Amino acid sequence: MKILGTGSALPKKVVTNDMLSDFLETNDEWISTRTGINTRRIITDERFEDLATEAAGRAIDAAGLCPDDIDYIVCSNVSNLYITPHLSSIIMGNLGIKGPVCPTMDVNAACVGFVQSLDVCDALLATGRAKHVLLVAAEECTRFCDWTDRNCAVLFGDGAGAVVLGKGDNLLASKLTTTPMPDVIVYKNPMEATPFEQRDGIDTHSALVMKGREVFRMAVTTAARDIASVTAEAGLTFDDIDHFLLHQANLRINEAIRENLKQPEEKFPTNVQRFGNTSSASIPLLLDEGVREGRIRRGDTILMSAFGAGFVSGIAILKY
Ligand code: UT7
Picture 1 (cartoon, rainbow, N blue to C red):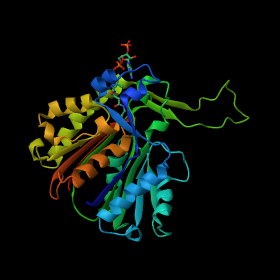
Picture 2: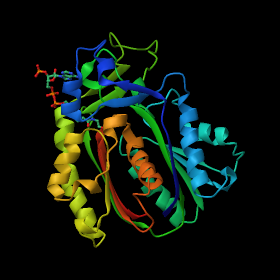
Picture 3: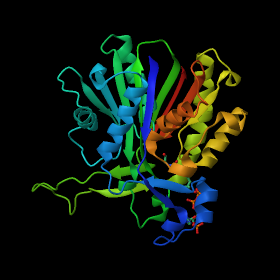
Picture 4: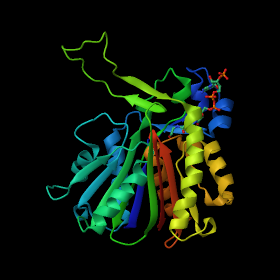
């Protein structure tokens, strides 16, 4: 596959750390020194699916295409009002693509969803099943936080990033791994109790629960291990990589990974300070910003690396 165009969209509401300390026992100093986050964008009166559609539309425009040229839509999403219908079908309708010729598919691989979906899209393009795939990563993370829990509520933000992919051989190498650790980051959907329940209560909905320190340790060790092996598999060294687009969860995690790779800071763009952790949208948001600002240019080599609930990790190296 190759990237034909990129796009993104963010909610307009900017929430500072100080605004959180109005109702949580927290403060700007704790949040900024432990995570790097200063502000985040939060959906208020926008509709989440409109934000996702806006990012998609921008990527289609940037690719020089129109919605009807898209023949497959893949959507990476963890947090969304709709469990069904899937978000990709909603985006398709919003874009005015009539169907039924364009299949749609949602991928939930937590914060790794965008990198994992690139692999899926590459296969769709390589086998000739599609010519132009729209891949949207859209997340409304602030709706799965318990807003009385300072451990989680301060970390997340909302946003959407998208790419349009066409046939090409620009994906140089990738590696996806899962280590079953179901307790490190958990969010359960509400489920109905049946009349046949034998237990006192059904274990149903809970807001996001996270073992932050364990996630931190896994993120750094997994990235250090896998980035080296994927770079070698692509026949490259770290010096050959122009941009390291790391999942934006915590600046300290990314700094630990960067120190391990011994690469200069300017190769590691960041947005977690402004947008918080936007889950699988964080990497396509970085990509689109880099492209729009002219920092990421055609021919550049990009390494993407993400980690998240599962425990899942994904690395991809590609030519832009
Ligand atoms: O996309 C994947 C999503 N998740 C992650 O990537 C999370 C990875 N982990 C992290 O980023 C960090 O572990 C956190 C930012 C979540 C936490 O930082 P930490 O340095 O590991 O702090 P901690 O959880 O060990 O907490 C230290 C202290 C505790 O107080 P005591 O027990 O020392 O008295 C917490 O209760 O900080 C307290 N604390 C807070 N204080 C002020 C926790 N959250 C807050 C808060 N404001 N928001």
